[in-house]
Image (cartoon, rainbow, N blue to C red; front, side):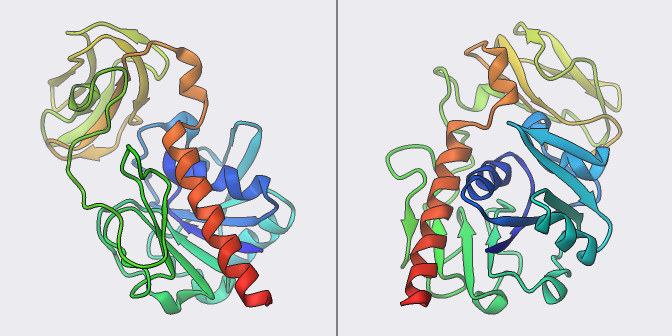
Length: 264
């Protein structure tokens, strides 16, 4: 099965890991300048670096839809700089997953592929997708909706190690992002993780920097640019999160559900 995944951040990468290990061929799309925070577990890094590996699965930047199809056929995850998914017409996937996580639908239609799955708020199963998958942490995380929609966005990050919004680092101003630390560094409350236009982006809790935007990216004030994990386990920086894998499991369920229905 050939699957196109819109988005290649950490949640989309967790989905990709589930699908590639289940035997799917994958093409992913993202921005020409990715804004993934958890870069060490995001296949979007292939756009920036040419290739990257997450949990033993290799992803390579493709410069055209044809090249992406060739990479996917070889077992490599292909990643295209194509935020509008213009490649859709040439790739003709068996299924498409919208994992942009924009909190709203940016143009995905149920007619885009034989199976279309929306991830997170903004999608309604049976209307703009065949199924939608819950991304809200809690009892329903990873649940598949074959009718209805995932829970609406609350703008409050999920609770990790007793902290929610405190663990998120946001740009203090508009400007160019300049990191002062690296993903995996131990930090203390009050440490400066980066600067924007000379303004410091300060850690409010202690832990390990699990995510940090790359240098040189234009950001706007309040934009999420980093993530401190209060559990302090550096190995978490190199592994897909429980949330990403739970969502990936939901996507895999939905794909198998509709594939079996089409075969009957």
